[in-house]
Length: 382
Ligand SMILES: Nc1ncnc2c1ncn2[C@@H]1O[C@H](COP(=O)(O)OP(=O)(O)OP(=O)(O)O)[C@@H](O)[C@H]1O
Ligand SMILES: [Mg+2]
Image 1 (cartoon, rainbow, N blue to C red):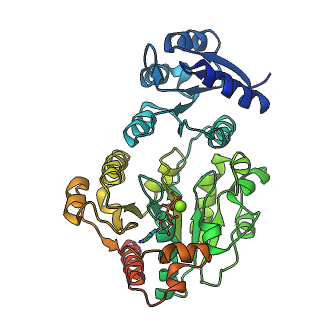
Image 2: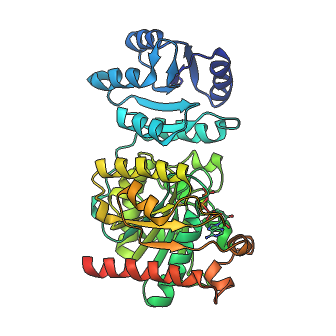
Image 3: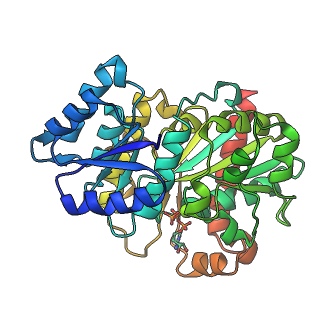
């Protein structure tokens, strides 16, 4: 019997559009334009997955999620929010209510939604990474384009300089398409998504070693999540915990680019990180979004003392002062990366870390300071 998906959306055009996309993937799709109709359908014959808009004519989609999650029969039902709303508040509220994923409804969003649907259906998230706690350093932000990938990659570069003997790996966990590989000129078909699919039982250490890059010329290793949305579709979430455990056994530092994802995949990684580098840019909307994100992380047992707050001046004009940011986020800024005009983009375009391309630029010292700070935390831990 085909896997059944219920699309709950007041807009029949969206239902039809998703129906065509999802039936092409072999799923059987039904639609409901109201929350009460959806509840009736679910109670009669539960689908395998719900794709839900929050704005419903008879109330808020969050209420529907709460009602389903309160009922033990539906506590494990896959729920993906697919909504026009995309404020961090909405995402946090949706995940808190019990949704498994949140995808922003916008043109072309099917490329993001389809892998999430597949992942949700084949591997319901049940992830705990307790054993790997310690060596992981997460890099994340509340918005895209804040420089998360650049900070992650250059911190790895700086760590190598400080500790040449250390085994360091950078993991790109931005799905469906990350940019660690392209920013380093590292191309590979060996991705986490592919590994997790190819291995029939639990991945082992030998397999992981085949998938992690050789040491790049900058002294660290890389493993990337996926090359494209199609491949991301195959990600077997159940393997992630083992992958991190194996990496912890081999590497001294595991730097993870999580981008702006807050999902049931990224949150356990964050929870198990010894340090969580949160990158903010000095504009009001990013700072406010970061506040919501930090509150959410705190509610998920990521204490504020594990957060390393970085102010990255990606634009020349400064809209908010250091004091504004610290007051709003109730955390001291650890470091500020200066605006480096087009140099960061030039480094990315040349597929070389900024610090390698512009070794004399003062901004490099900030990455070194960040690496030193993380090194000190790791040493204090062990
Ligand atoms: N300090 C800086 N000064 C000037 N430009 C910067 C700075 N930091 C980052 N940038 C630029 O900002 C852009 C985004 O950088 P990057 O890709 O590292 O961010 P990101 O948060 O990983 O983005 P995405 O959300 O796409 O993953 C790039 O064009 C980069 O050159
Ligand atoms: Mg990025």
